[in-house]
Image (cartoon, rainbow, N blue to C red; front, side):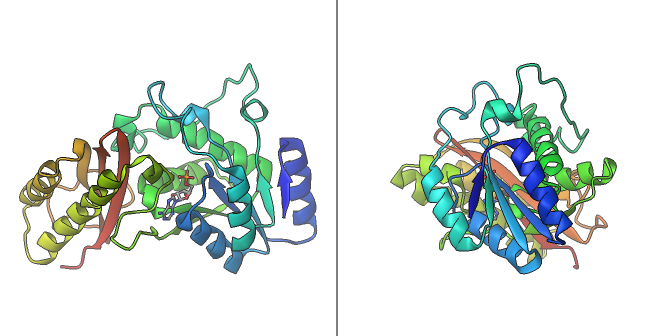
Length: 287
Ligand code: AMP
């Protein structure tokens, strides 16, 4: 496995791979890799002949009060994980390499980027789209892999790719969870053991909403109220950013269960102490 730090070198390497007919899979990450990332790399391995994992904690997707400086990092462990999972290259640029001093261009996906996490984290998806487009231009992957754990991000990247005619296929991969159901995330490291134990309430509240609907509750206001009450009754939940029912593609809010969509996105973002966690499930809408 080769580690590449310079964009120029990454571009020439990718060009060479493509000229040899290799199919390039890209797995963009912010490092501190875990089983969710490893699953993305493994999925890429089944479809592509060369796998590139990018590791870059992207400063422009963090707000001024957010956790950029303390975001967990462990490059050595990331290299081991990536190699074991089947990566051929790690693209590991510095901040200066990605953003020169006079950097002025940003990508914005309107509407989709303004709701849910976009409302709680203004500018977040603008930062995500900008870095992802840069990675696409540097690496020119055939397929890029993203987790459904960050469902809104996946929808936005798909839309950007379509709107800007970017020749890349976007693959969405299932959320990998801990045994108790908590979605695995690099940010889970911030949780104390008590907080970690209680963090599963996020997944449980989503499952509760799902169960109520499956069991016949058609009033989404009641479903939401019940799920939010479950969250609020947990003393470790310090804030609820949102608990929403949304269209799986347009991300517009669903008010009635007879809404015509193949699947309903149930998504939530909460704070456990000082740690913000997100999760979602997709509910088949075939009642
Ligand atoms: P991050 O390093 O957190 O920016 O995540 C990099 C990629 O891994 C994104 O596409 C995430 O959606 C994906 N990812 C993170 N956690 C998980 C998980 N638990 N299951 C599946 N994919 C994940």
